Image 1 (cartoon, rainbow, N blue to C red):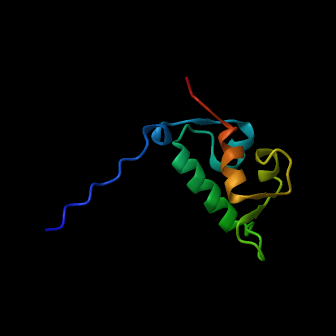
Image 2 (cartoon, rainbow, N blue to C red):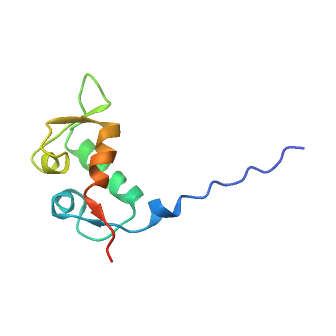
Length: 93
């Protein structure tokens, strides 16, 4: 008999609402939201503005709104982007 698969529980630290700073607010909005939602909104913005590099899809090209979030870099990898975005989130307390 197959055992029922346990549903994965999301990590509570990812679900905790975080406050985006001014630079990140320009892209995702200024209300506190979970990191997962921040990442989703950034990807929506990247796709809407066609900022994914055509040759290397893992690279994101920064426009004027994303450049401050990417610490002034013109292009970052997906993985570096996550790290840089986390630096623009703070606990809303």
